Each structure stands twice: as structure tokens, then as C-alpha cells.
Image (cartoon, rainbow, N blue to C red; front, side, top):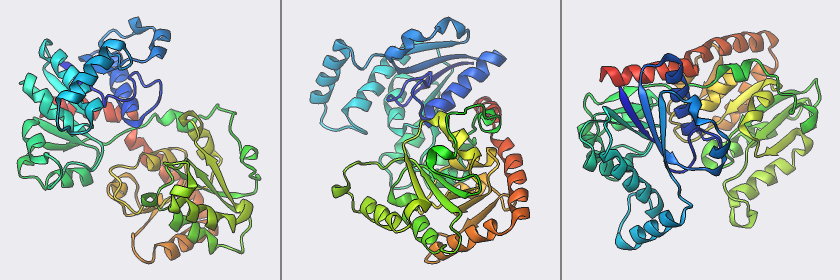
Length: 393
């Protein structure tokens, strides 16, 4: 098939600057380069770091890039901004969608894929009349969402990252027989064979005998960090249990963020038992997970599909998580304890942490099952299932 993939319009592909969606597109590209099944065109944004990449290594992939920082693009974007009264996202992203749509019109593509941008579907459909898919990673397409019915009606199909997201899309009348589930994947080898020696326990003031609980992700209310800290505060008789919080807050100014003030107030009473690492490059995450003992994912929101859980399982960590969105589709009872997001969450987090801490056999069993469960979510399985869904729809 001749396939065109439209990126989110923010981060570059190849994914030299990270990004979950961009990394998944890389998996698709690299899988296809190996199996030589399709011709793929990537519509994305230019990055100056691309000058260091040898694009001749891509035999079945073409890159059509918009330079958002060029003078001509900036002028055209300003004209677009002042000539439109409303936008789906904002003038920046809507302009990107318009520019890509114009380029799509002159191409010969059997399939178009909008990566996680429902708002790109309608402008693409105006210039393209073939098969158009939306690859949906977030919970933003459901009954009552902006132009949701129109977007799904314009799609040939929607590829949802979990059954939870599928159920949400299926609240729309126009979604009948259009939604398939394709689970995300990760590069399992990065989390199994750790050669990176740049991160270690000593770097974060941890001792070899410490039992390390890890949380990775953004620090914001819906992620349940406050509840985790409150649960950890109740564990007073085990000084060797430490909590490592890997990630950064959405904003830096504490005076404008009462939630962060509460977070640091609770943690200040726990002394050196709680360590905030701040932002860590993704390349360091496998090494960090490998020296930890337990992963906790206490989300109080509905997660679309938790890659953090897959990464933790691949690293062999037992998991405590909430019954959140697609979480039960990723983990199982052999490698995790799943808790309800109710008024007992803090108490149950404390209880579950101590249950795993006090049972070495349980730790080993959960670790073994975690590694086995993670195999379902390899990058190869993701790419194979993705292309199969396109063929069969």
C-alpha cells in the first residue's frame, strides 16, 4: 500500500526529540523498512538536527517536511491566523493541517493516517477521498466532544489504543463498525538488557539494601501523586522503603500552583525517604526502573493506555495501579495489584505496598509474570497489528 502518515505537527519524525506518538511512528517506519511491505510518506515538521541524519538509509519511506521556522512559513501562518475567526486547535496546528492537506491532494495515496489529531481529519477529507484513518491515543473523541460525530463520519476507520478508548468512541452514532483496537508497543530490549551505566542508586542517594518504589510521569493532580505520598506517609516503621518520583511538574512557579505546594509540603515531612529526580531523559528510564523494586501508577483519571505500565513490566517490576481506563488491559493479576479509585485509595495503596514489601516470593513471582506479560506489547507486535488492521478494514 501507499500510505501517508500525518504527524501531530509538533515534534519531528524521525523521533530525535522523543514523544510517545512520534516514537510509535518510528516503530512503524522501521518495521516496514525491514519487511518491505508498503511505501510510506511521512508528513511532518522539519528540525535542524535532521541535517545529521542520512535519509538515504530509508528505502521505503519518504519525508515531506514543513519548516515551521522559515520566513515564508511564518508569513503564511500569520495570514492564516488573521484570516480565520475560529480554529479547531489553534492557528499553529490548524495551519499545519491545511498545509499538509494541500500537499496530500497532489499525491497518490491508498491510505491516510492522522496520528492522534481528530481536528486534522476534516481538512484532510476536503482534499482526499480515499481511506482515511484516525490513530487515536487519547480520550478526546466521544459523544459531546467537539465535532466528534463529524470527525468519525469522515473517517474510514479509527484505530484506538485500548478497548477503553474504543468504548468511548463507540458512544458516537457514526462509529458503528469503524473502531478497531491496536495496542501500543515499546522497545522491550531497552528495558531488558541495560548497558547504560549513567544512572545508579547512588546517584539518587539510595542504598543497595533499600526497597525502592518508583513513580514515573508528570506531577499533576490526575496522576495521583498526592495520594501516593499520603499512603507512603503511613509507612513509618520501614526506613529502608524509599519513594523515587521520576518526572517534572507542568509548571515551575510554586506560588501559582497550590497542588505542588501540597506535594512538597507532604514530602518535606518524609525527609530523605522521598526523592524527586526532576525531568529525566527517556534514555535513562530503563536504567532507573531496573534498580527499583516496585512500580506504582496511582492515576485518579482514566488513562487511555499506560505505556508506563508496559515499561515497568518489561523491567520486571511488580505493579500497583488503579483501575484506570485501559490499565486492566495492559496488566493482569499475576503481575499487579489493581485498586479502585475510591475513598479508600490511600489506605489500599499503603496496604498493597506493605503486602509486596513483606513477601519476597510474591515479589519474584510478580516480576516473572511482569516480564512475560510485557511480551504482548513489543514494538514488532504493535507494527504488525497496525498494518494488519489497515489491510482488513
